[in-house]
Length: 71
Image (cartoon, helix red, strand yellow):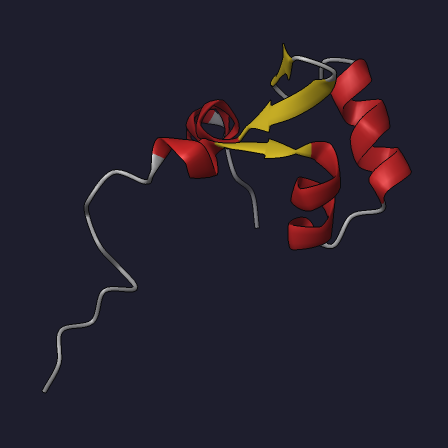
């Protein structure tokens, strides 16, 4: 039986933590314009690199963990 690497405890690759708004919106099934609005309004953590605004998924995950969840 081969090991299951889908649930690794290893830290994610840092390059995966920064992604374009377009890629993030596609991956999460959200319209690009909505994701862009969230980024511009500061609802998504972003950083500008050159002429691109990148979403910092690591900061977003950290923030989500601190939120109170209801069912």
